[in-house]
Image: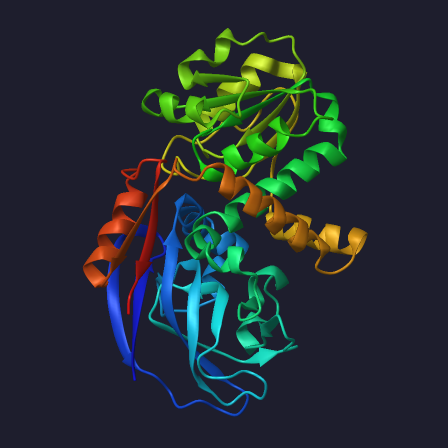
Length: 360
């Protein structure tokens, strides 16, 4: 069996190559899955940009200066030497940009299993879990594309929302969200907008070309372009959630609100090649939000698995609410994957489009 992988040079993301190799025979306890389809979003760009810092390159190792970007997708078990996991099963989870993945299933239950491959032992538990879909309800089975494209992002939206609410918004009276057109951003805005107990105003910052799309979502109280930041009242206590990774935007927000900036939460890197933020900024110290850490904290607070259940329940509701606003395209083959990845890296994919791909 031939395995196809999409490799990216870790320090030069526009340099990519397709690698083919023969699959190794399965060992006892292993299973092999054929990856039927996977989503590609700005979130995957973030995985690549911060891969060395947060260990994203460690999930699916390549060689030397190369790496394999993790993605969320669906796969079918095509070989199994693992008791309890049968050929033909359909699995949802965290996969490489590849045609196949070999795993070492452990803690196998009726609904999921974990990959106990030695190189993944110290990586976040959240990403090592794979869901067995056979017993999923029909409405969930009908949302395969949304589950790949939206659920992981809206799950992050949920834990950011939970973080803000849990900390009483750090005393802020409004939430300013940069890169408001990104899915994680408007998922957060949706949760805040539909929570009757949240009184904070939600302001979305976006590029001029995305204003119409963001306004059409109907979840922001106000939508502004980046050059309008300084027109916001500077005396309003504000929490800032940055999905952009644009140092200039972060610097501008901090310098505008000064000590009225009560929290500065850095989440995404949709504008990954922009200038770095200044080192010394007024207001709250910018801190990086790492979703798996929040999931782990809430698992301790609420019990194992409760956070995921809540987060994916919220994800399903948000996904249903935007049906018709997102054009999902399906493409297969090596050229399509390469072109799509480079388009995403170069910020050429509009927020209204969702990419579903396959190397099979």
